[in-house]
Length: 470
Image (cartoon, rainbow, N blue to C red):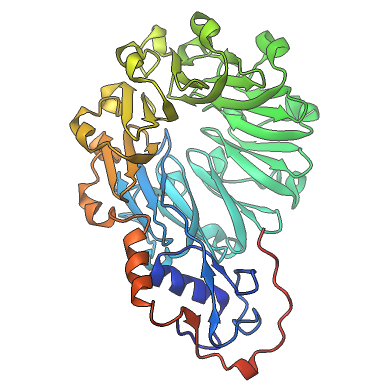
């Protein structure tokens, strides 16, 4: 690579990503190259050999989201599904979407965190796509979160910036004094956001009907290590394994009836209006609306040695240690994936689970996929069954599924309007891990070492040691 002496480390990184499809750069001294300091300040010299790390492409979607975004290994993005959510009417400059590190989705918009710490948004303005009001504050950010209609960014100093619908999490002005500059994680319900600080305190804002007011349990929200949500409530796990919940009492915000069972909890998952908690002993405790999976009584004896749980709008699926799956819920005891009898014999050696708002998808250890639930929500994959081989990742949007195969291609099915039809971007959904790109580029460079040139060695000062690679 040839770069000018006045170039920054970030510019070098973006150039390397574009040319070689790689992720991070590491100097010959083993330090991670990041940030906006100059190459001279980073201690890089003419002819220095640089190592690179590689990341895999990742699908971004969600049960409420109307589209998919694919984060390619080279830090660029591809979006398909609902045209508004994909930014057809947004002012986003797609050339800005380079060196993307993270992407979060609301119900109809996306926010991308760049390696520079800046944030770029696109999609439906009613769902948080318009971040112009806080554009100047969206610098030096390190994480993102969303409700269905708003976004929040955590800056490097631990402070929080919000935008989107002010009623549903887009305005945190009333709680900012409480949050301070110590926030490490933010979780979104349908219409509210909850922030956790490094000390384990939690503060929420947005719609009171969806958990935006935690004042009733504020004194209990200490030593919190994890926060999860349904559409209308939050549940926090404390370091001692107990649980605190707030929000809509009929949507998971009331644990009165199961409080004695909620001990040694290490994971919680939410459907739209119910929670399922996994205890350290592998057993499951549920609460909330019975129509949303809040009552697991009919399968209680089967819920042993549970590893993972996923949820649709109104049903749950639990992956057991032996690779089998147990399902329950669904309005009136059926539908939305709560009944898996039709595919139960196929649910063997399951590796991971995913869901849309009305169906489940299981990725098996052999790389094949099994789906069940509402056909209109991706529950029927027969149309692409022959393509679902050597799958490495599966992701759900509101009513469609998408998978990444080991050869770097993407297959989708379900509701065409929200991502089930990816033909319009098919050419961009090839070699998403940039494997072929790296092979061709590095093969061409075999005769000449990968170096950073044009920086006179004598001009490079003795640079201070950069932070060691973790």
